[in-house]
Image (cartoon, rainbow, N blue to C red; front, side, top):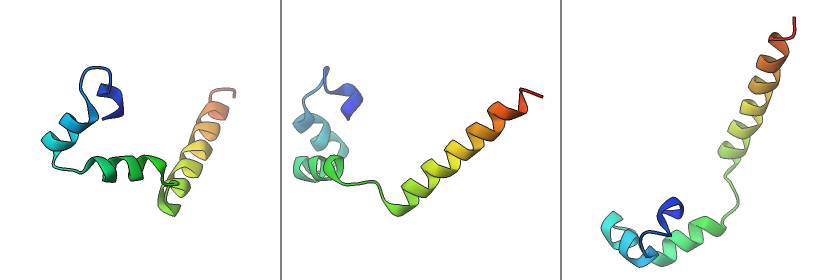
Length: 56
């Protein structure tokens, strides 16, 4: 929804997607879950290792 805010109002997108506006805004303000944080840390490690592999 964030990517399309310039083209469509949040209210319209929420209705089409079957979600509430309040739920969307609450989701945007929440901290990332522990799982999402672990995924981000793993991705950072993978990218670091991958970048280092090209140096040899």
